[in-house]
Every structure is written in structure tokens, then in C-alpha cells.
Amino acid sequence: MPTTQKIDIFKTHIAVNKQYVGGSTRSETNAQQLKKIYKLSSNENMLGTSPEALLSIKKNIHQLHEYNYENDLKFRHALCDHFQQSLTPDQFITGNGGMELLELFVRGFADPGYECILSSPTFMAYKNFAEIQGAKVIDVPLKAGSFELDVEGILNAINPNTRLLFLTNPNNPTGTFIPKSVTDTLIDQIPPHVIVVYDEVYFHYVTTSDYARAIDYIKQGKNVIGLHSFSKAYGMAGIRLGYAFSTPEIAGYLNRIRRPFMIGTLTMEAGIAALKDHAHIKKTQELIALEKEWLYTQLDMLGISYWKSQANFILFNSPLLPTMMAEKCLELGIMVRSGEVFLAPDCVRVTIGTREANKAFIDAMEEILSTLSKTLITKKNNHY
Ligand SMILES: Cc1ncc(COP(=O)(O)O)c(C=O)c1O
Image 1: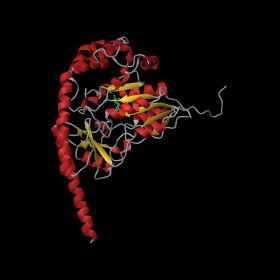
Image 2: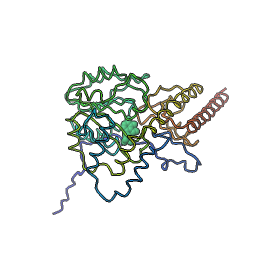
Image 3: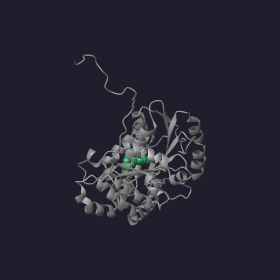
Image 4: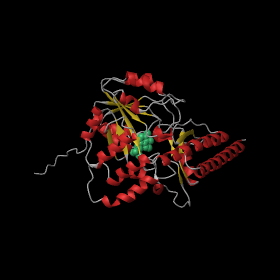
């Protein structure tokens, strides 16, 4: 008999404050009338996809009619080779981009009653996934101004209900990094019931030697999960591929709860090929290193302050409200990202591109700043 009683079909413990909103895609912008749009809003690789990955997609296109579950193992073996056999295949977990893996970690370790720690401004998908799982999110913000990690604050925030600590190194959107001495001190003091998600998806761009990699801690047997993505330096954001690595115990558990057939055949083959495409990575790293310095100089000349970055983007203090700045840039054909969504309310993030794109961005900034100063002068004159 159908009941007339109203039954709540939605899980009541889920209190998501805000859905995570990614950067707009090219087709979603309302600047379609422009002849050229430079997309400097999602930290992609402007040199494009690894040519080796593209070749491998073409080579394997005939394989699509078959399930290729075993290929996950093939991919994990390729990852072992990439890591020079310092990890075993059972220490890797593969997924449809870093995002899917982050969701898996949260599903695996957090539930209502548990807590996850993050340090804003940062990649806020962590918060969204934790809230969907019903876990409580504790924000121990980065120190104002310097964006340094508040190690004492994090240690004080840990309690018996804490399960995950998200460390983003280098951090998105600030581009800042956590020095090795700091990660060493912090990770040494983390109790065994807390798992550190060490998100290093921008590691290819790091030039400082004062930087610890997730693998260093995993090899010491610490409860650390390293996260890598093919969306950044490999130029494969559209194909969705990422992987994580950890101790055999943690990785084994995550592999048992992950769903089968998680990544597609072409995606895996492309990933395996991209791992060997050292030339593309080198070219990308050289471009970013060179263009970062060029952009620093240009921003200095414009009097715009910014944070030195270890990634392929720069966060700067916006002379306008950041959403307004993003809109004005878009009108001039440049997509940038307002810092608001990351809890960096006065800032804008720009991805480092080719010289042509970076120059177009600087030209746009010059134009915006000159209109701004004209408006200010007019206002001042009217006042007198
Ligand atoms: C810090 C950080 N982690 C993880 C991701 C997820 O990347 P993807 O899902 O594209 O692999 C991103 C994407 O922007 C990111 O910035």
C-alpha cells in the first residue's frame, strides 16, 4: 500500500554549505564574441597535451569495445617504473583525476562524527567532499600575509575524531610551499589515527630544494597519501586521470573500496605514455620558470603585489574587487580566477602561459589600471 506519510529521502547529516565550483570552461564564458580568449584560469598546460599521450590514444582507439580492468595493473606497473621501483604496484591507487581520489579518501576515512583539517586559502574541493560525507571541516588558516602553515594551530586542532589532514604543497591558489623542515616537524608529530593527504599535484614546477615529497614520508612508513594529477604538467585535464600512493596498508584499503573499472582504457594508455614523455615535461618546466620571472617583473612595474610561486600560477593582490577584476579581464579576452572561492578574498590567480598569453594578460591589466586611475581622477576632480 502506498503511504501518504512524507518520508525524507535525502540524507539529513549532509550539510553542504556550498557546492565546490570549478573554474569556468571556455564554452561557459559569456565572452564568446571575442576572437581570442586566453584561458589562464585553471592552471592547465598551455603547451597542450603530451604528444606521446596523443599518439598512444590514436594507437589504442580500437580497444574501446572491451572492458580493460586488468589495465589498471598495467598502469600501476608503469607507475612503479616511473618511481624507479621504490614503491610496489599495490601502493598505487588510480582514478579519474585527483578529484575522484580525494573523494575516495574522504569516503574511506571520514564519516559523521569525524573531522578533517585544511588550511585556507586552499583547494576547497577538500571541504566539499568532507561535508558531503557528513564530516566536520576544521579550517586552520594559513598565516595572514605570508601564507605560512600554522603548524601549532594544526597540532592543537587534532583530537581523537580527526581523520584527515590536507596539506597542499605547493598550495593552490597561493603558489606558496611548505618548507621541508616544517613538513618534517609536523608529520613527525601527527598521531597514527590521522592520515595526511599530501597533495602535490603541482610538484613538477617546484624549483626550491627545500621541499619534501610525499614518497619520503611513505618510505618511512608514515600515514601519508601522496596525490598526483595528469591535469597539470602533462596537459591532460580533459581526459581525467590521477593517482595516489601510500603505504601498502592504506593503499590496499583504498583499492578494496574503490569501484572497479574506474579509469578508461584510453585514459590509462595515455597516462602510461605521458609518464615517459620527459621532453614535454622539460619544455613545460622551462616555459613556466622563464615566464614566471617575466611576469614577476611586469607585475612589479605595474605596482601589483604578488606571492612568489612554486607552481604554474601566481596569486596577486587585486586592485579591484576580485570578481570585478575577473570580469574586466574576461571582457579583454583573459580568463583568470577570483581568489574568493579559495577564501583568498582580495586576490586573483593567473595561470602562467606562453609569452603571447602572458603579454595579453599584462596588456589587459595595464588597460584596467589606467581606466581605474582615470575614474579615480575624475571622481577626485568632481569632489573638489
Ligand atoms: C591542489 C589541487 N589538487 C587536486 C586537484 C584536482 O585535479 P584533477 O582532478 O584535475 O586531477 C586540483 C585541480 O585544480 C588542485 O589544484
